[in-house]
Image 1 (cartoon, rainbow, N blue to C red):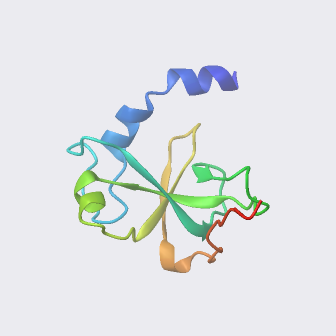
Image 2: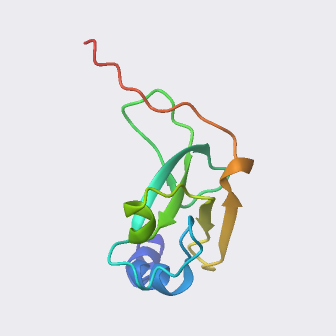
Length: 110
């Protein structure tokens, strides 16, 4: 059942039609790319989040969806995004209201 849920959902169409840019509040429909940005903020929700298997810090990190114009202009996201995969309900969380997490730094000393 879960596998079918993922396969039957057109993620790109959903994002382009329903999700706003987390930096400028503009539409994602006009953006050539869908840019998912991992934030150094803790996500208190299930999806979408980022993780790093190479780091000992496995806390889920918040994600933002940002349009090409904001990526090219190096605009910082104001919001992190959460959506429910079943109901497709979208919530935006102010980045400033989320717990800071340290940046991931991989030990290259060997």
